[in-house]
Length: 85
Image 1: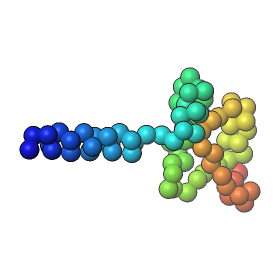
Image 2: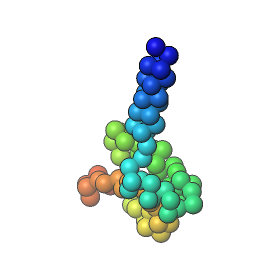
Image 3: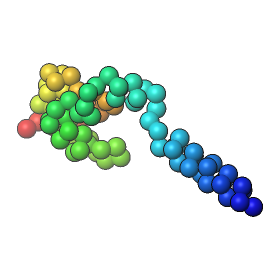
Image 4: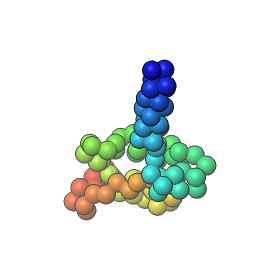
């Protein structure tokens, strides 16, 4: 009986650990960068444009991303959706 509990606990823990892991592509991006964000502007942009919400992109954001070499999953919007400030 005791062995079944340990086995169930081990299997459950393994599923949680494996399920919470990043994909190999994400690991490669994270390994190639020394920090999670390229700059404060990158952090601010990422916090304002989370998955599942409408993206807010300005031409200034695009210029900063190119200049600072932002990394991670790209936020894609059409030309019409780019906000003018």
